Length: 235
Ligand SMILES: [Zn+2]
Image (cartoon, rainbow, N blue to C red; front, side, top):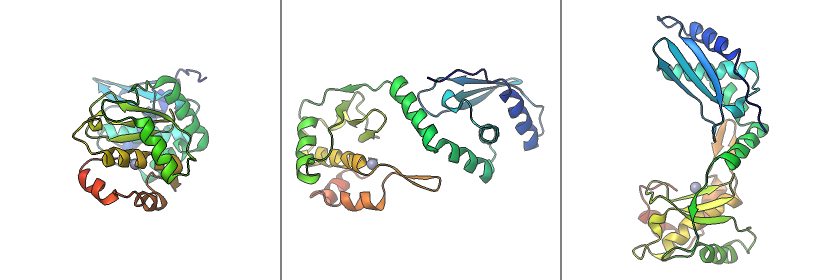
């Protein structure tokens, strides 16, 4: 459970950071509130002389330095400035710390709505495809996550492994007689590799497709063909 703090004190932090930026304009009246967002998302907008700031409540209790860094990042974004390297490093180090990541995952699990269509589509059955690939390429070692087709016929996101919800979602666009089977298998194989190779950290960078991931991916028999077909899409 996360307590919803009144963000008292943060108004002053934002005011201080604003003045430090040295902009030639009067300091807005800041109203900073925590919001129960399902992700790590903070927003800032100007309404006349007021600046309304909504911070993701998973950041409640962040150390003062992190709050200052976040204030700098949001204000820089609002006034088209570049936040300092120190501010970004400070904020990222905090949000990528294991304790905070866990809180974010938890918030997503409990608040994020994960709607997906049943795995058995009109043309392809995702469970059957998963089981077959699992047997053939992973020695049956992967636990089957929730599987489903996306509710949207998205063409931008083809497949997605959601570690917080333990789910693989494949775009419904591919549940079609015009789509060859190897393509759906490739998408599934790619997402299964995300289970096998969790996101790594390299300093503050998140490495989603590590070198090991990319090497393993090439073992898919129709790898080149699939990549060619999917050029311009992102998986
Ligand atoms: Zn991927």
